[in-house]
Figure: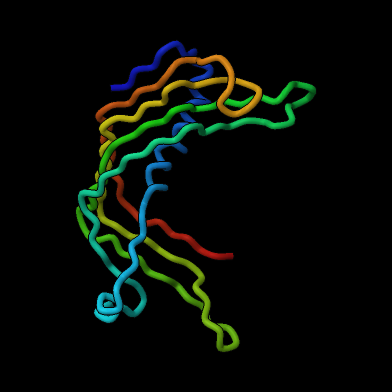
Length: 168
C-alpha cells in the first residue's frame, strides 16, 4: 500500500529518485563484530569466503536526506528538496549462501586487492513500513513548506544476482 498526501505529479519524479537513497540507507546501520582468535583459526579459504545470512532485521531513522543546489542556477537562488523524519522497518532473508570473492594482482612482489564480487542466489526484502514524515522545498536542507508525506507499507522485493566492485 502506498499513500501520498498533497504532492503534485511533477514533484513525484524528484521524490522517487530521492527515495532510492532511502531504500539504500537501511544497510548503513549494519554492524561488524570482531572474530576471536579461535574463530579466525577455523577459517579456511583460498580465493574467497562463503557465509549464510538469514532473517536479518532492518530498522532505521534519518533526520534529513536532501538534494539541492547550494549556489543556484542561472541567477535563481539555492534550492533544496528534503526528505525529513524518515523511519523504516523491515527484514532481509538470503535463501542460499552469500559468497564473497576477492581478486588480486601482484606487481613487483606486492599483492594488492583489485576487486570484490558478492554473489547470492535469492534474497527477499520485506519493508514492513517506511515513512517520510514530510517533504520540503526550501533554501537549505530540511527547511521550507511541507509538500506532504509518503508512507509505504508491506512492500516485498526479491533480489538475485552479483555485485562486483573493482579498483581502477
